[in-house]
Amino acid sequence: MLIKTLVENTSLSKDFVSEHGLSLYIQTKNHKILFDVGASELVSQNAKKLNVDIADIDFLVISHGHNDHGGGLRVFLQENSEAKVYIHRQAFENHYALRSSGKMELIGLDKNLKTEKQIIFTSDRFFIHEGIWLFSNITKKEALPKSNHGLYREQNGTIEKENFAHEQNLVIEEDGKIVLITGCAHNGVVNIVEHFHLLRGRMPNYVIGGFHLSSRSGGDEDFETIDKIGQYLIKTKAKYYTCHCTGIEAYKRLKSAMDDSIDYLSTGRTITI
Image (cartoon, rainbow, N blue to C red):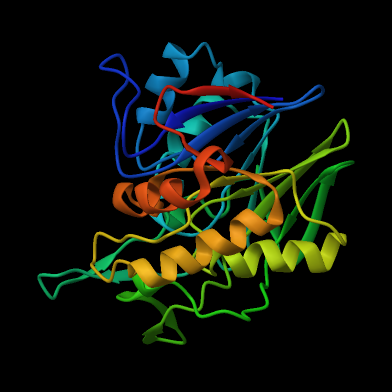
């Protein structure tokens, strides 16, 4: 399995432009998959530099309804008119972030794309192909990340605290290995891994994605909680590749505890599993 980081907050080199967002290209034996599309047309630009043809993508998964993960959807649909786009049915609702300036900023997806013929709405546990499936509706045993503070949704005309029901996770099973991919882990990376274990009866071999331990709106996770998360992740015996909303300082803290069990994915990086 080949994974290329098309969009992330940092860059491997000056050859790649970065932005606050996430997009991963995943090539299995039988499929070419895109997981999220970043915040802009940058996904297309970096894809070309990494020899990824957007038109050849078999399907796209949008992890949740925030524009740093789905802002490049329009350019994707312009370049690929065949691929199905799997997105949670609540992802097109209005989602907001309360910025440090006190301004409530709309951070949702482009509603004009909701009726595109390629869109497939998902919920709970959704099977795409053999060995490729999605799950949401996470059981929340542990507290959600503090960095979720300041995130809201609109429900029946009322703005209320976000519940992250629109967030889904991708699972790919191939050659006896299981890869779990998160977008931002707003529901908590520990909760997501535990929920996967509940569904599948075992731990994944790899976990890839953002852990939302940092936020542009403030409310970064404290070191005590990060250490506790690191202790849990080590016990799963999985290999972790993190990025985006985990935050560099939180990553360094996890790295010091987890050593080779965790690594970072910057824009332009390619890994083979």
